[in-house]
Length: 170
Length: 292
Image (cartoon, rainbow over all chains, first blue to last red; front, side, top):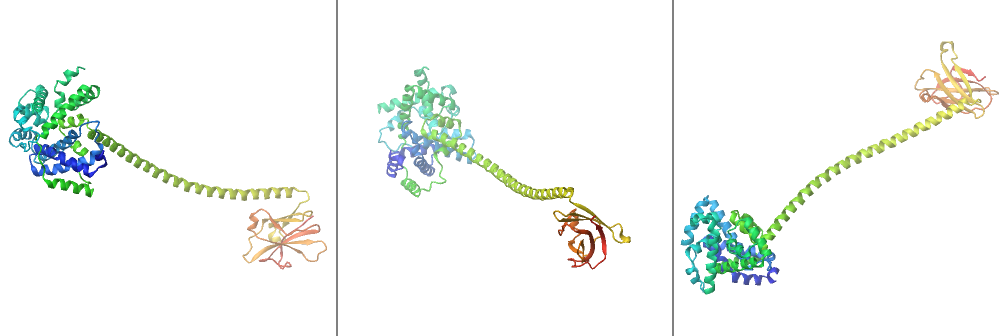
């Protein structure tokens, strides 16, 4: 595999192909373009350094890369929050308000998927975003959405099934 | 396990969204290995998530790509945080769960790298302990070496002394045997003057082997420029014959060998001469004794 040889051409292709998606994830987590650029740089350096360890048998490359981007961005968010001496409760509150206000609106429609977002129930988007983009725990989600802890998982399942159906239709 | 029920429980969706506990993640990973249906469901859900995430794609500033390639080409990645560092930093239970839960090689290798770090740390500690022991053993050995050398010197000294004693002993043995020889005569030489009748010397003389030994039983210490000289009065000789000088200090050896004389010695006498002795006696006789 060219990537394993750390072939820069392949890495360049990888960057061109995946950086918009990773940048989108980071931006959704951090809501700050300057920080997001720095984190994207960090993420691709991590990918460059650890691409040798990626095993096609074990998982999807895109998911693997998304995982790195998401973890790095959430870590950055947490360390910043820590520096500002914010309490977890406050973060959670911020997450709740900012996800609706500051969410980066999809600027590209090449996949014809923006319609999907419109059709996805607000509560369903929120539960996915809180978990995936903000790294909230089940406890935190239950509090933020004001639902019983035991129903968080089923809500998540329903949200993703709804997402899947919308994706099929598009 | 009821696979369908497990799949429909929402665990897979929560896992993919990074929402499960460590325990749940472990269970799911085991289930994925065991049941292809579970693995398929996870893959499908991950694809859904990928497509969802892609909807928020946004072109990053061009400068980012330039910066990344600049860094990669300079190969100066020292100080850059690695993927495993980021994983370690994740502190919330959800993040930990997600980290453990994901079966992506990144995390597996992280665990591997971590355990290797432990192995390396343990190896270094063992190396230091070993080095400490080596140093101690080395110093101990050096100490023992010098002690051993000292003992060797002491032993060779003792051996030499022993040699001396052996020689002395055998000399004395020989002397005893010689004195016991019936041919050996013991000639007492008492004080010659009335003033010093307590002076005494003894000559042992064996006419057959002609050896003469002298023992000073009671003679005063001479001056530094004087020596006692033994004379033999021999039949047919007008003058006493020089039998040699002797030192009182040498007489600490019980006997001192003198010049040899065969048959014909009538008497022995001792005078106190100048150091080195004289050809003829120049001083008065101090002690004297007949051989028969």
